Image (cartoon, rainbow, N blue to C red; front, side, top):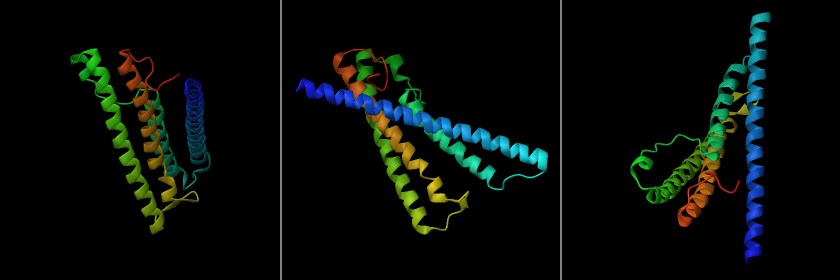
Length: 180
């Protein structure tokens, strides 16, 4: 039984590292593409008096994608926005359990938002009358919403596992997202 548990743990760690690399790579490529496109747009405006008509709206969408993917990465690193007033007033043992409850709640909220975003994107795709930008339909550009909220929910879910282990062991957490 312990051999199976160790094997599953190693598999989980590998999957987590692969997901981290994928998140980082997509975010890096997106920011690099934004920089290149913005520089090209500036050069075209300054040197030739015009630019690409679709570049500015696409850059706005890319900023949205970068922000939401950055939120996924921030959640992974436990650097997301949180109001942590309770840690100042509660005993450490109580706060460990509150952290588990907080992460369960955040997971539920993010799963709900992911589901609602799927409904939104699906409705937009079925209507088919959204604006098109750079050859992409508006529903395709909005796919970031369900993807990001699902990614954040996954990170909180992994955090629940780690926080629960720490609370049961009565130890302080080293890393918010588990076995690294």
